[in-house]
Image (tube, rainbow, N blue to C red; front, side):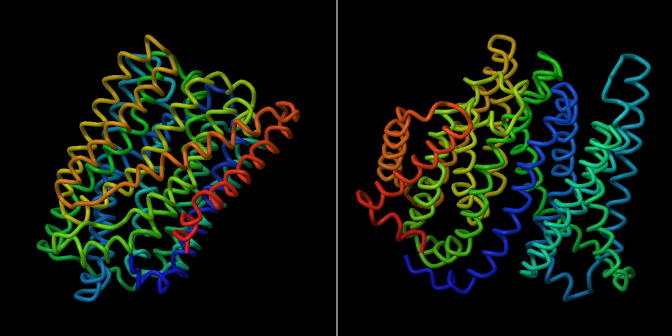
Length: 474
């Protein structure tokens, strides 16, 4: 496949990769630190609040982010950056949600002992500021300002981690400290950007422009919300059936696995996107097959050995990162890893819907997958506990992945290299089993050495048996 634009965007993509890597690294560090500072029950409460924040931010603001990526440059050229309209929208949303939450708060306090009610005010501020932060990032992507995107991503992640650590460790504020840390990073970034935009305060959008943004962005709002419900909707049911303690254990393990795999996903997708667009415009628009196999091969070759190692040494690997009270779901870890892997693949398969402008179809597909996941959780969690949540989420991801392939093929012809995937999986499994008998023990050092030797053997075996695979990374 000729990728004429790839070399020209390599520098920008490398900056975006760093912008994803540093927050992911701090996310890992945060999980290691905060699961030791917070008990499982307290971490479970924070996890539920965080889930609510990201879902609400997606539901209320994602349509604006996607619309801005599509129309933002044109609107700014026509009438300047419409800061007045954006601020009015955020204030209206914050006020409406604050009034609703106030009612829920007093209802919770009056009619039940709802332990999370005391966190509601900070939760409102957190998701509004998260929405503002994500919109700021969208404005930087729209103008290809990768350096500013990197600066804001890193600044937010560093402030969030540092402030939360100080508040939890020194002042022992627990969940309050975690929420304040999250708010602190977004407030700093938003304040910096707002200060630069003050000259645009009088600029606003026309009604027709607002209508265009809403019409384009509305389907994306459902895509983002349903995707998050597919990934995190089980948190509410775990809390309901099993309590905050079990939720904390499940969330810590899930996040540890998901962050790692999703980092590789983000890098591959950002690298692939310009080439996929070029392929779509040059081939698919003429009814030809879309040749994007190389990006699946890159994803398979990087993520499959990670999944195999997690299946081989689940307790040992996560035991390096999490405290012992969180290591109680060994069987679930394998299914979480496989589910996260499938979810990563869907970031490539859904691009077909995006480029074909079938976002409504995509939102319906993800909505059905999320509903299936939640329905299965209702039956599986009481029966199988935390393992049941992992089973249900895996089935939901599997349904989403397979159905996106089936319906995507009806829009554009393309192929997933299943043969290469099977070869890579076999090499990864055989490499892991070849290193497992080494007399290095199952302590932390022994497991790390075995994993490194497994990855080395895996790379050497690919180089010998499938030398062409490395050409896809060029």
